[in-house]
Image 1 (tube, rainbow, N blue to C red):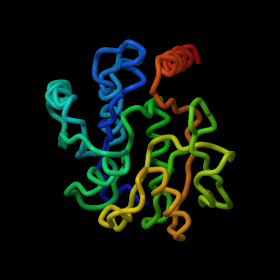
Image 2 (cartoon, rainbow, N blue to C red):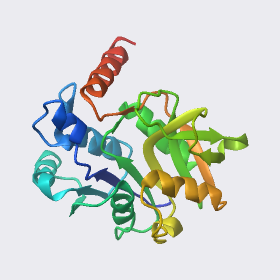
Image 3 (cartoon, helix red, strand yellow):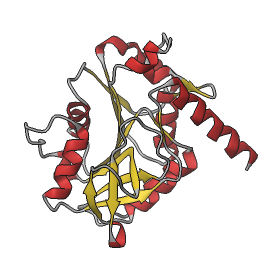
Image 4 (cartoon, rainbow, N blue to C red):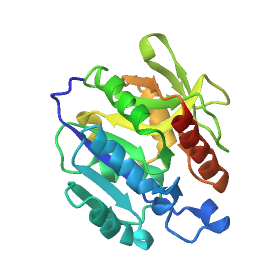
Length: 236
């Protein structure tokens, strides 16, 4: 994909943050800080830093205040919010993907924490894939209770999503071509991971590009891991 083709941004921030709340966190999950920077701020900053705009963000109704917070934090940015409590990650993904922007869309989960330079590197790599392809970010950093394994073949084409083992795991960032954005997922699919596996099974062109370290921030230990990577980056 060339840089001249339009690419919009999307952030899925509609999860309920149950495990963080059970660990004692009282703020909305999108505002959980990593080294002082809330997850939502970091995600929006990554998109803007990579030159991707507008950015559509979905938050659940309980966390509706995150919309005003983000607009005050980024007053000049073109941020568009969907406030809706969804039934699943796939519903959130589909609602963000259906936003009224032309071209491909780069969608990230708000809790897929990575360094800004790594995010920009993924964007550049994903843009080089064929225009009609979906591109997944994958990482060898496996620190998840239920990792979604990805098997990658020649040229970076994804051969399988799912299973009990693989080379790397999904990292929560997806470059979605416009034709796929406009197609509703089959009703029988209930989760985003099922949709990704279905795309590969259907023979859709799905590619993978690696980010060395992405942390899926669901637990207090994930916050600590991400903060340790921040410190490692400072000392590099």
